[in-house]
Length: 115
Image 1: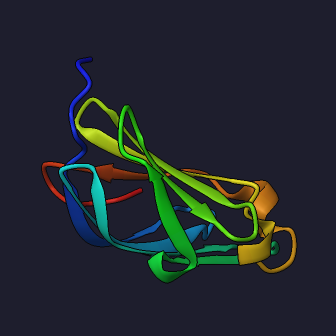
Image 2: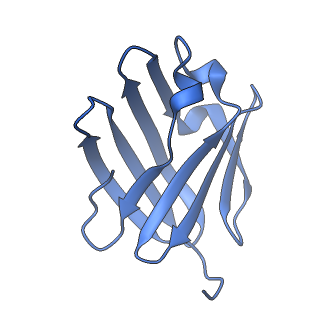
């Protein structure tokens, strides 16, 4: 896949059959994050919440990367027609042990839906 600046915009919600659910607001224009907020609820584990104000963008290519003061890293990258938003070392943004069960959020770029 060629390296190109990330472009994505969504305001979506998701839920699976086990009750894992959340929402995301994301706008990335020419690999620059303009809006980011995500909340994920993990049954019997807790929840995680992220807001752009708690991060600074440290990378634009080949993937977008946000760094938080607490050591949390949020990475965004393309996977075909999807954009993945992954989290690393983000326990500070979560209750209980939810960070141990936090999966990447996948955004379908053409439809704006997320999983």
